[in-house]
Image 1: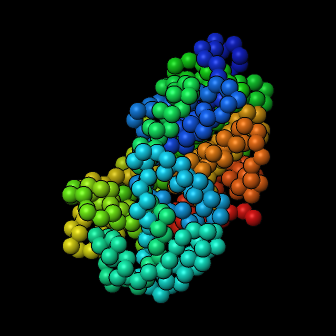
Image 2 (image 1 turned 90 degrees about the horizontal axis):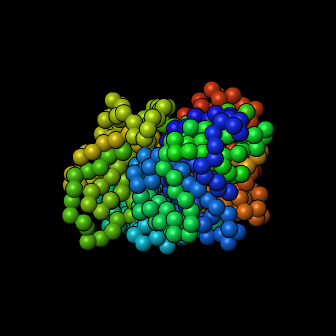
Image 3 (image 1 turned 90 degrees about the vertical axis):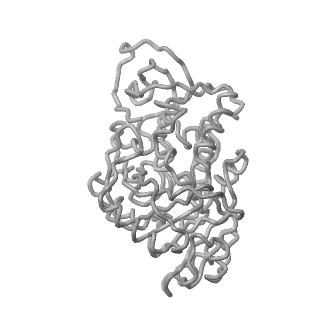
Length: 405
């Protein structure tokens, strides 16, 4: 959904619905938030609004589902661990296949050694293994001429659509109202939100959460920059194959910005090895294919064993968001009372971010370090052009974060 923010007076439209909390956005983040809020016993009415709940038009619908828990950001690592815990409760929502990171050079090996040490410090199970061991774990995705690999047994692959549908179903059963329609404005009275205007009517509410992903920066002027920059990203599906008798870990090639996985009946592969390209998404998170993406995928496919015969059956540009520090924007917008945001959140961290924001909305004590790292106002005082430039520069180092201490 791509709503425009309009400030209206109380006489503009009669209220058609009343709620305590409105969540704008029905992807995995908004749906997880609706679910966690629905388990509260405070009796508050929650309404979730999206153009479509059955068809996921945002980034959730095109996410490849890789969930690597370790991140150089301790905050993102904790959020990923929380997310895996929740996804594991969803029937067929998460597969603990593990994850592999492959080093193809001595510099790559040194990087993996540093990641191994940091992962162990944070309590994550990880081990360095030989190239041959990695090939045995994922024979269709790993060649035997690499140097070393880092194995994370606790990682896995998520089914974002299944998880999102589960969260929605459970939330609906607990009384959350799901309203389909376009959001046309957020109504404010003085310095406080009053509700949300939609094509299905006005929803009066004292609290509004923006969980609209790639459309977040277009919502309205909060008198602060919202550097959630949509970017183009190539991904491909291979030809269909019979399901394997073994389950392969997903595979990353950090030095080459390439990642691959077995989707069950076909392989998938994506790459960040191209010039960052800003997008202006319309109705979905599916953008036009870029000419340079063909060469990007051709380079990536050179890393895959030849006998896998991985060739593109379907290629698409799945748009997602980047920020200047590769961290999500989750928390309160203080200059508009009752307004909160949960944007630029990956599937990897979605449930964890939703749980964090739920605690904040309930007035519970939250971790100060996490609150500071995710603060959506942390870029206040900087101009959007420079923030967009920095965000795009971060695309090629998507796993590198600049968390504030």
